[in-house]
Picture (spheres, protein in one colour):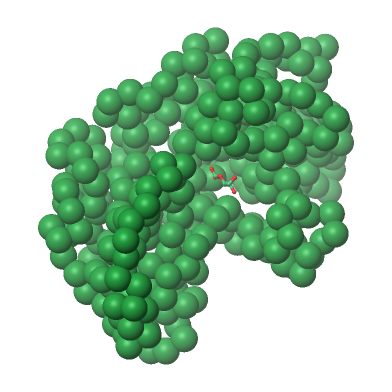
Length: 351
Ligand code: BGC
Ligand code: ZN
């Protein structure tokens, strides 16, 4: 038995290929799923371009895809899953040592870097006709969400960012009012959704002036700004940074209110350099108790928060966020970055 899978050979650029591979290895988990949909993001693009990614030990091919949605075909009794359930598999697995955080289920905070990530680092991903998952590394998706539950993984990433902003905020009395989301891609817009659900005044900053991004931001009830931080204003209690643009990141510190927290979720390989007034920046951070925190990945708690947030969201809004659903055979189109794109998803099975 074989199945189709989208594979790459990191670090070879342009090695993406739809090939027949053996059925999912039982070592991947006891729950067998048919794949419904897999979202693609910048990380997938980087892997395809040969800048990131690592195949499983002893192999040269990696099955791509980390934003999963599957439907259970087989699950052992007592696993908590039954045929027909919709499931989202987690991306990261704890390191084998394990470090203190991985041992505590906080693999998203791994300290030794020896974690693995499905579809990214040392473990096959979900972009195949079927996948297997360990019951303890998955959440059930709300059937009412249907195929839109494929947004669970990117939502988990911003759910962690918001949770960490709040945990830092609560070091003292914390009554945030204004939030800024930099970048109106899928992460930024999902981050804005979580801010609006917290009843904050949410501002979204991006460079595009028209199209789906401003519409989606405004339809959430957020204020959309095209251009610079000056236009977005200042005194933000929370900034969720989703661009990874270094100069913008450091400039945004000035736009935080006293005690404000900025969580960084984006990265960029652009290699920009800047001269910075570092003493001024330091003084601002110290005298205003400002915090800047990096954030990556998500643990079970954040997937659960994401599931809850998506269940509360307007399904019509989520539906517009996925601009393109691409069939597996046309996978190359899913990896193209087209003007006006927000989220692109490879659709493999039907609900
Ligand atoms: C994924 C994360 C992952 C990160 C770094 C992101 O695209 O959503 O789960 O930790 O890439 O590999
Ligand atoms: Zn670890």
